[in-house]
Amino acid sequence: MRPRHIAILGAPLDLGAGRRGVDMGPSAVRVANLNGRLAELGYEVEDLGNVPVVQPESQGEINSRAKYLPQIAETCTQVARMVLEALGAGKFPLVLGGDHSIAVGTVSGASEHFHRRGEKLGLIWIDAHTDMNTPESSPSGNVHGMPLACCIGEGPGELTGIFGYSPKVDPANVALVGIRSVDTCERDIVQRSGVHAFTMRDIDERGMQSVFEEAIRVAGAGTAGFHVSLDMDAVDPREAPGVGTPVQGGITYREAHLAMEMLGDAGRMTSMEVVEVNPVIDEANRTAILAVELVLSAMGKRIL
Image 1 (cartoon, rainbow, N blue to C red):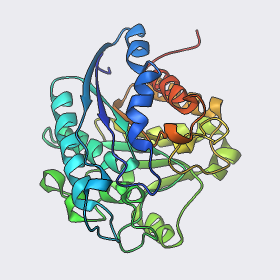
Image 2 (cartoon, rainbow, N blue to C red; image 1 turned 120 degrees about the horizontal axis):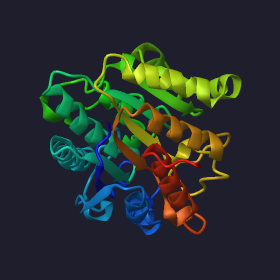
Image 3 (tube, rainbow, N blue to C red; image 1 turned 180 degrees about the vertical axis):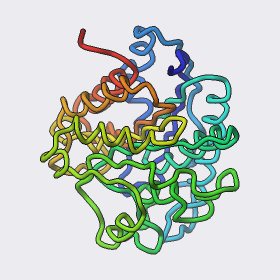
């Protein structure tokens, strides 16, 4: 059973992205009354505030192959420690991004919790992108395109080596859902990695129920449970316009809710993060409001 105590942590990081604004994502989601809505579901909600993040304007020369890597690694390490502490106290960590590079911290903290118990963590990654570039393959050098590669042990040691071991998740227990944008050099990394990728074509042909049933099986096979990483750009821009990297042809409103409701039914989610909400390009906070609705569905809210 999932803990009834939720620990919310903001990670207002936008150093990993090419477009500014997702650093305001945690505030936008809180303004959409995440804390209050979770409390209405019967959860005890503790908001741990935000981890401190440096501003890009205050930083000097950067590595063009992995921009702001030391600063991102520092933030991810702080997130990892706080997630580990929350899980150790029997709480459910809910991390608010920020760009998707923060997932390295969240997954590292959750993985370490189970690693100490001799158990494994699964991972469901819901995204328009595979996020499996490395500094060598990335066309932009933006680290928010690399976090999943880091979680399965491919990428800069500053990120893969948090807590001193790698990979944090076995690729065989990783399910990607909603994929529709993959860089040319990244495609080979994905195909040889061993992760299970479900593209929008899979969802079109099979339906979200079939795809997500398999995703839950993949992430849950031989694991203590799974972390869920929700990038709001997985949802079609018509429903979620305020995201870091929008891509047409995404998951519909009802498909997104069905996926979250199935997560709630499975009861094996250990932790969650919601990332890439960008209020700068949003419409009346629509994307943050949707993010809150999706979190509520994942945490057990039902129509009846």
